[in-house]
Structures are given as C-alpha cells and as structure tokens.
Length: 112
Image (cartoon, rainbow, N blue to C red):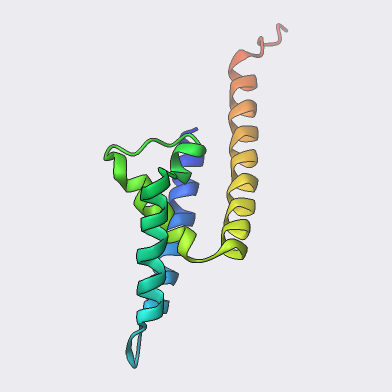
C-alpha cells in the first residue's frame, strides 16, 4: 500500500498545482476558479466526502482529506472521472507489485 500512497499523492499534488496555475494567471486571479474551489470544499465538508479515505489513505489531520477532495470536486465530473481512472490504474499496478513481492518472499527456494 506504501507505493500506492506515494503514487496517489503525486497525482493529487500534480492536480493541485495545475489548478493553482488556472487560478493565478498573468492577468491576475481568476475569481471563478477561486469561487469554484470554495464551493467544492464547502460541498465536501458539508457531506463529509473524503477521496483519500475512500482509497484507504487516512490523513493525520482529519479535515485535510475532505478539503483536498473539495478542491478536486471543484474541477468537475470529467476531471474526477479522469483522475479516478488514473488512480485506479495505479492502484492495480501497486497491488500487482505487492503481490509479486509477496510471492517472491513466500516461494520456497529450489533445492538443488
């Protein structure tokens, strides 16, 4: 699960950086992006939605997962679909890596 947590964190960090770039442009702050983020975070807090918890990653500070989920929600359904598809693909790869590693450690050595 450690590999998946690192990959998940990297995907979320990249998404947040892209979003921050959308909010702050050469011409100043795009208030529509800021308003969208505030609404998304409000919805996530109001309903207790935590994408991190769904995928099995518990934040040490409880509201962090919900706030980050709200920012992701503010990007819209197409973005969420794309990011979930990417995360689930990486989770499957991480599980395969873990299974392969476990199998190597559990396999009896050939006597020869």
